[in-house]
Image 1 (spheres, rainbow, N blue to C red):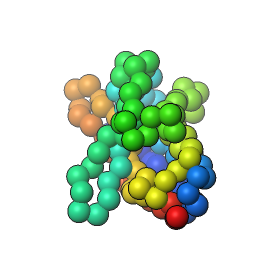
Image 2 (tube, rainbow, N blue to C red):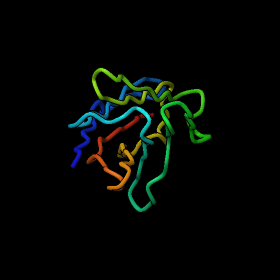
Image 3 (cartoon, helix red, strand yellow):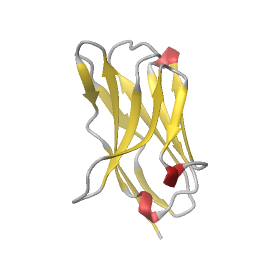
Length: 116
């Protein structure tokens, strides 16, 4: 079983930046599908950014041009660089990785709060 641990969340003013990290407890192929999600109270978890087969990166419209998903293969860690943050980006952010034959592994989330 793989554990995912998110970090890097916090409180930031609007216009600021944060970089979230998602570290895996075991080596995971860079070709595994992976995604960053966010959730606010009372709302469904939504996909913010994803990478498929290690190269096809997609972003939700609201974050295009501001968020960047990347991976450090040596550290077995994915990142979500978030720039020009807005109050509406406030949420708990989760990472998830699809593991063939096992299912989807989730992290426990990290809180991002953007003040106006």
